[in-house]
Structures are given as structure tokens and as C-alpha cells.
Amino acid sequence: MRVFGYARVSTVEQASNGESLETQKAKIVGYAMMQGWAVDEIFVEAGVSGSVPLADRPQGESLLAAAGTGDMIITPKLDRMFRSASDALGTLEEMKRQGTGLVMIDLGGDVTGNGISKLVFTILSAVAENERDRIRERIREVKRHLASQGIYGGGKPPFGFDVVDGRLVANADQTATLSKMRSMRKRGASLRAIGEAAGMKAMSAKRILDRGNI
Image 1 (cartoon, rainbow, N blue to C red):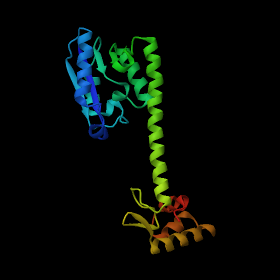
Image 2 (image 1 turned 45 degrees about the horizontal axis):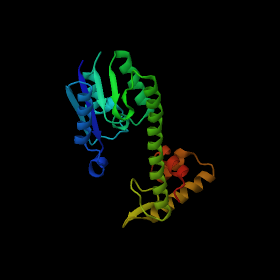
Image 3 (image 1 turned 90 degrees about the vertical axis):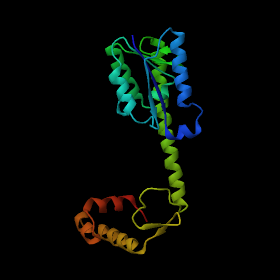
Image 4 (image 1 turned 45 degrees about the vertical axis):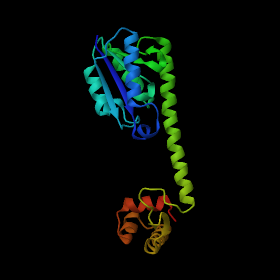
């Protein structure tokens, strides 16, 4: 049996989280020693978001290619390997199919061979995915609040605005163009005609009008 470890931190965590790569590697080696195992290799993923599926990460892909029947993978925590429930469970099923064990230290052992551990694994995978969705929603709320205050929250400014000193300022030419586009739409003009009048493609005109920038 070969034993592999997997450790990961994202860019933000490297700067602010005490769960460093060295700490994770120490936990992997310590767990293996308690089981009487020798760790053959630890795959270290530095600066990669947990939202990226395991198989799409450079070291995650290498780990999955290296581990085979009878081998064991050790990771300190569920969220080091997975943030998506579908990615977690799909990878787990593939590991079980090929006879590879997966130890998650925070869940108490091999989640491929223990029914209770798998249940906890499933629940926590869903919780991790839900938490990521909540973070995204909080970011969207912050951006909406900034926009309501006229503060530019990043990304491409909406049609009809320029960014000046970090704030959204109306662009007179684009505002006039948008007013003309909306007037044409009320009169029943086609999106193609509206786009041509505004000097843009029909789908771009549709996105701008549907968004209701001003």
C-alpha cells in the first residue's frame, strides 16, 4: 500500500489563516505514523481556490493519477479537498470503485469504508457548498450596496456610466444613446434596428435594455 497526502491553501488563507501548508503536512505525517504507515508523497496545492474541482487542480490531478488500488490518501480537512458536494461525492465514488482509501482526519478516518463517516462526509460536503453560495451572495449584496451609493464595486462599468475617482458618474453621450434605445423599444422597433442605431449588436442592445442601467 502506498500512502499519499494532500494539502491546500488558497491565496487569502496563506496570508491570514493559521492552517498553513506546513501545519497540514505535519498532521498528515502524524496521522500516518499513528497508523504505522509511511507517507510516500504529499501533493501540495498552494494558492488554488477550493471552488476549483479537485481533478482540475494541478496537484489534485497528479494525486488522482498517482493513487490506485489499495492506496490511501490522507488530507487534514474536508475543505482542503472539496467545496462542492457533487465534486466530493463523485470523486469519493470513483475512489471506492478503484479501491483507493480516503482519510479525512477531521472526520475521524477513512470515509470510503465507514458508513457513518460517509454520512457525515455527505452532510459536510453539502454544508461546505452552501457556505460558498452564502459568501457569493454576501459579495453580491456588498456590490449592490456600493452601487446604490454610487461607489464603483469593480468589473466593467454599466452602460451609461464612467468611473471617476472610484465612483460611477453618468456618461452624457451613453445616457442619450440609452434614452434613444428605450424610446425605440417602446415604439416597437426590433432589437436589430435598435442595435444598428446605437452602433452595437442586437444582443448587446438587448442586454443593456434588460439590465435597466439608468
